[in-house]
Image (cartoon, rainbow, N blue to C red; front, side):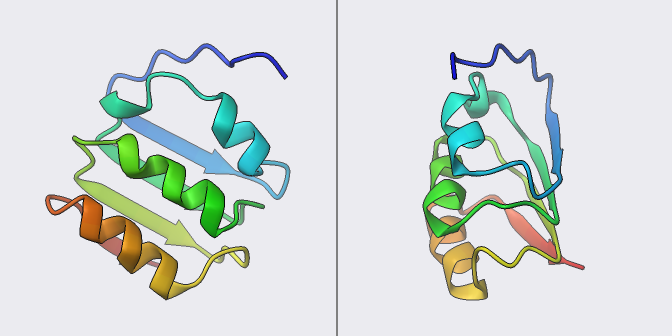
Length: 88
């Protein structure tokens, strides 16, 4: 994989089991993300932690992700105090 160029104004939706830690590693412009939705991805706790660079993250929405646990989300949120989590 090469780095995936992204132009994220404020929102990022990742959906599909094909979205894995390897894909997350290749994303650029993550610090600009304010809204992040993860829907049935293949991301693990390691990939989730990568979103810790999203200093401006205000909202994290997770839908049926099996690769990480609630504790992993709470660890991420501890690094992002302005972020609210919505689990669906």
